[in-house]
Length: 90
Image (cartoon, rainbow, N blue to C red; front, side, top):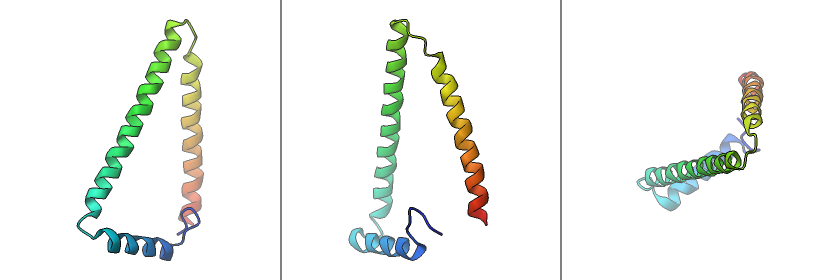
């Protein structure tokens, strides 16, 4: 398995070093903190998007095309995942 040009042995080595540095009892707390940070980042970006849409609507700017772009992006992502999924399975 290769993820970002890193082999399985290299990932195992990195995880081993993390366990040695932080200790097994600290890793769940670190993972929880990372998860909370990612969630806060996602919430902040959603808030920024919402504010941009509100101010654009107040100014009378048509934002309907952004919904079409978001739909197209989701379709492209789904297609890429479908193709990538078949490649990864082989």
